[in-house]
Length: 267
Image (cartoon, rainbow, N blue to C red; front, side, top):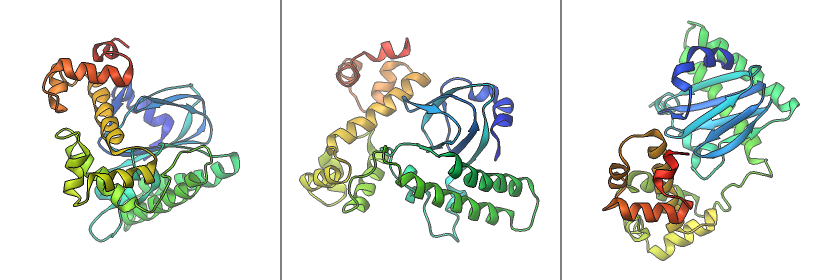
């Protein structure tokens, strides 16, 4: 937990340019302007902006010198420690990679929310009794209030139906585990003990896309992340994502983005 302006100075080298984290991150802006790119989507930064990032998401920002606010991050264990029967993925902004990672607050709502961020920072700096539990409780309150405001945003495309939400999340969990292994809906349907037709119905009803679309989107997102992060050669990236050869991967990638993987490296 830190003041945003202090974080930007202290971690300038680590956060310069496109990068990703293995933890959950929340940042709220009280002043300043600029843009924040998260997983290749660009969002405006302005007073009242809140961004919530899941582990693995790539991000990059360019901010004005007067940017101020608060930032905190934590691992999954912090929120889901053994004596707490809850999941950080229950919150809508973390619940699906298809839910937008941002929220814009007006002046009145921003003021009330900032009070809680200030309190979180104060507790974090203390060496008080049961400090971690107090941090967990306040984080839960912040997440709960952010969720309520998040779901009220009319301009945010959210899950279209809750009827199949539990099964949809199960599918996303399996997809996260096996998208490098298999890109066919039948593979996931079998693991869920349902038919491919029913899996497609679940996904269509929940988010308005087909199971195949979601699978390809997840593979494409990871391909982009790996390419811009230069984790290996393009052939190695293709192979790690389950493609037998680079030529096929290149055609598959170009069909969905309009350009070859090598062009993405060059910008």
